[in-house]
Image (tube, rainbow, N blue to C red; front, side, top):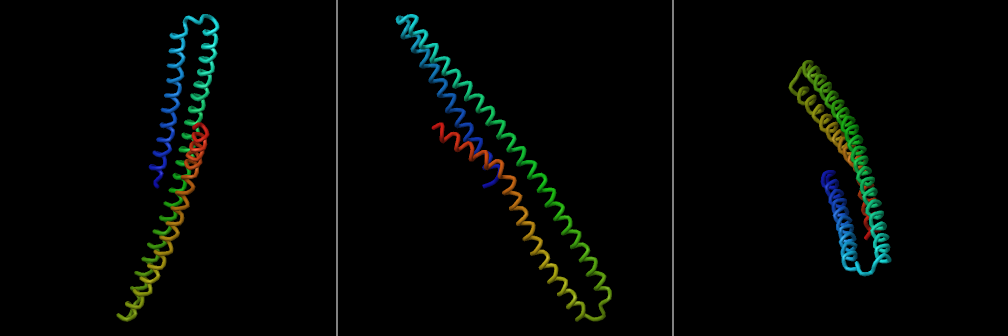
Length: 176
């Protein structure tokens, strides 16, 4: 799954939790308003009970809002960390690729120089075969190194986002 897809999945989870919390707060406020209208005949004791319920509900809502803000900030920090890891890793991969290209260019120049000293067609074919074999072997080796480095970079860059998704799942599983 791509970084974009995993990030989108994490955003969906957070958006769903926010919507559920908003619905809970809305239901709590609606229930409080209904109780106030229906219980006007009960006087001061009922008003005090209702005020207590409102205070608890608002404290919960404020706490939830603060938690969501803190969680969102943590998500942003995880995304920034993942971006920094990705950027640094891409710079390293670019350096590796440039070094490989430079080595290939150097080998090509060496092969041209070697061809200039060839005295027979057989020597030219043998030399070309040798250079082709070496080029293929280097290409396979370097491709493997770049692939391994790319996979490692992807894992490292996804780690902060994966941690946040795991935290979100744990946090919302407890809330449910």
